[in-house]
Amino acid sequence: MLALVLAVTLSGQAPPDRVSRLRAAMPRIDKVFEAFAKRARVPGITYGVLIDGRLVHTASVGVRELADKSAISPDTVFRIASMTKSFTALSILKLRDDGKLSLDDPAEMYVPELVTLTYPTADSPKLTIRHLLSHSTGFPEDNPWGDQQLAVTDDEFTEMLKGGIPFSTSPGTNYEYSNYGFAILGRVVTRVSGMPYADYVHDNILEPLGMTATTLQPASVRRGRLALGYRLEDNEFKEEPQLPDGAFGAMGGMLTSTRDLGRYVGFLMSAWPARDELDLGPVRRSSLREMQQPARSRPATVTGGIDGTPIQLNSSAYGYGLGIRQSCDYRQIVSHSGGLPGFGSQMRWLVDEGVGLIAMGNLTYTGWSGVFDEATEILRATGALTRRQPEPSAALLAARGDVTRLVNEWDDALADRIAAVNLFLDQSKERRRNQIAGLRDQVGACQSDAPFDVENALRGQWTMTCERGSLRVAITLAPTMPPKVQHLSVRPAPAESATPACGVR
Image (cartoon, rainbow, N blue to C red; front, side, top):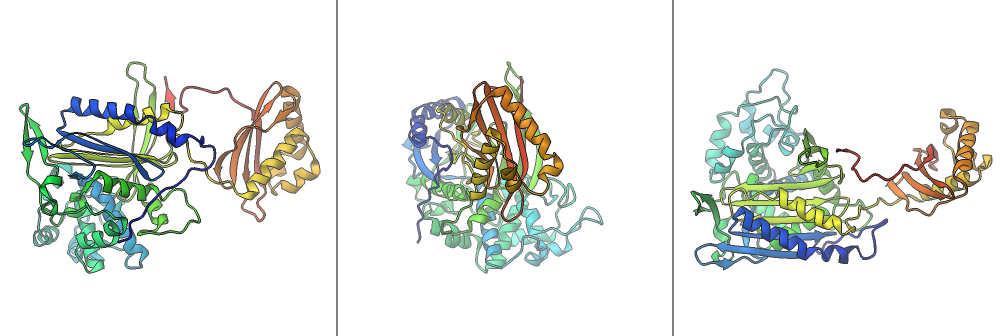
């Protein structure tokens, strides 16, 4: 077993005490989770906070079993339901990386029962592995139905497939959450690898990551470690039966502990940023990043507007076994929830900020989104929830220095040396020289003392503080060797606004 210790450090403008400031917020985070457990009447919850791929804080509230009032610990095992889908996606990507399949292969290559599938239109494409991974199959959304399929046997699943599947839309045209589709992916893993899905996941993901408490078989978990699931009905808690693992396990059968889930989410978070560091696996970092990027868009949503709160537009999508969302505050939020009779769970992390949250509860469909939002706001209030900066290339750093000199004192020879062929065709050298001279007359002498806001290795912007104001300078380098300046903007710096760019009050 290779147990990996995963940590990614932030570069750029992160404050040196960032981690300690975030850690100092844990008592306040504990209070909001405790209040949530009481408010939602969850018998027991367990949760954790990750910073840069490390599980830095865990806590538990309540009991894993109501009868004997036994307490929950970070080693208590909960069912995580649809969070299993990311394990299935990882398995498919590993098989792809090993050259065993292509994401654009027709699914019927590996599941021949799909050959007789009747498509909704004559021009529908054949169902592919990529469609299945991204909920683009066109199968109807099936959450209420899918919950009750975990115990289906392989033979029963085969008969279901032979009987056909109805379509709500044509494959590849819409997002439609499909447990059925991920059950089919589980069969793909079995057929391509030549071993049962559960064994493949154990040997290729769980064991390499040191996830010793994670399993698809509730019966394999010692009772003293297993959280029992409950529903609240007629003001009474009623125990839900532990559903056995079956042919639909790939869509929602996994059980895990806080410690193991922390290892797993830390591994997914370790994909960022792309870097030269040795790739230890067990799945390539590039594949981890691939599954955390939009593959199928979802309808945008608008939140807020109540009691004076800002109205905000939220853009969301589905990757491979993971949801991706963008808000006014965070560029890339990756998450997945899980809900089954007796259980509710969620994992969520901010890609650019390197911070994640995990939680599990033993009440049917325990909902975590609100308390996760509260915890994130507490972390942001520390001022240390810093966005990870991309590393600028040497060419970009050099161009920043050269452009700063041009702004302070224009020099035609320097301008000619750093300009890409288009720069003075888009706007003449004389006009650029005069525009910058006019700004300098307006604001006085300037110095470049602000942080470099790097968007990528070849694009960035910075503020120059001047005697009577400040200037905002932005550059983009061209795809030439050496890279030269193809875009240059020098403008008065805008006043800071407390309202998010996409928020309307």
